[in-house]
Length: 278
Image 1 (tube, rainbow, N blue to C red):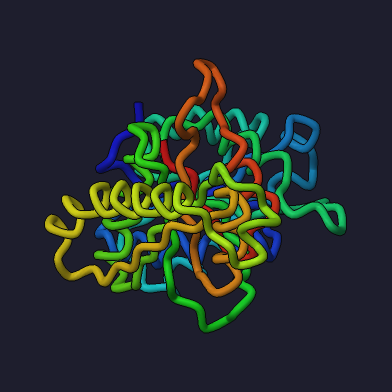
Image 2 (image 1 turned 180 degrees about the horizontal axis):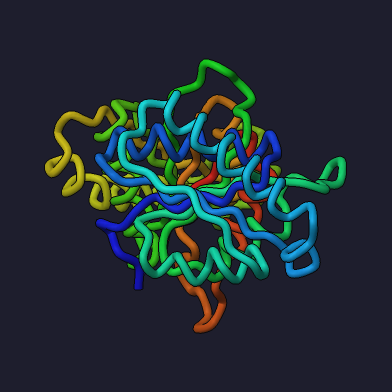
């Protein structure tokens, strides 16, 4: 179980992606009054070598400079030896959130999410934010996916809390498939039963959002029930967003499935940062 009052843990490796993640983590920490814990994990093949001390010193100094420039007031930078994913997963039980770049060193062209960020998102005990440059540089909107399930509730609540802390506008999306065939819907003909399904979906969405709107009255929120699969709806919405928030599992998830198909798809295809919340 994570510590909601714990530090913002961010993985660093000297790459541009990791620096972007560090800046995101710093801004989030300032907005929420949290401490930042920046962690560089040196591989065992490097640890103890002549180059290790120089690499360690460079990583620490660069991270301290970024943190100071960002306005973070409470932070620490540390180095560890081992596997990055294992160390960060271990720290996640003490963290409020773990923040990572989408790729890191050695990223292969076209690979949207790296092995470390994907593995941590699967197994961390707290929310994980995978940071990437948004498709629209000026984007500030936060998008959250929900299906009304208990598994999706933490993502919705986290998104509201994030929007309240940062002043962002929030869009809550329920993407679902109707009983009608896609050609019928796409042609503009919506049978009565599909209209009923949409009405039910809109009611479910309103019911899920209402208590959080009451708890966070300062958050401007829109609600959209969209008759396409959730992964498609959220990926499309990510084009104009700064952050997409999704649960680690959704309705009907099997015990032991640590990352659902929607969150997995978003990690690979979203065109902005993604928060996976459990």
